[in-house]
Length: 154
Image 1: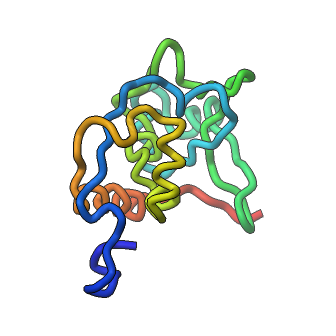
Image 2: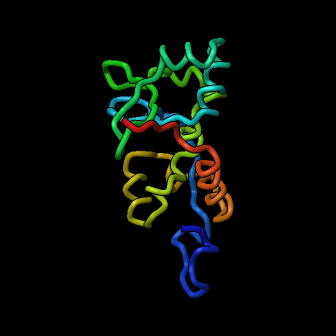
């Protein structure tokens, strides 16, 4: 996946960088059902932001959802599928989960130029705004690897 993982002759579609600037349209936070998977560090940041302890935060704002052989911890959604923390914008923006902070630089979107373009069809910030170098893009992926998601076997 990383440039260093590819043979010298093979290039990644984002070797020259990718353009992205969040326009705070909230399209990724609202309207559609989805999961915001959390790491332990996410919970600590969010709990602190909400003036709660870890367990209180997990009980109030999280749910376990099926994933592979077990479950992953995710933020709850409102009945209209908005993120639990969306109210005229993100109410926990400074402490938002890593999944939110690293969008759209996710492995599932960076796997091909087609996946990147498909993600751009629903996000006006993709292919617009600031140019992020290949190294910057890969640093976002490394951040996720350094903060594993909370999972449990059922």
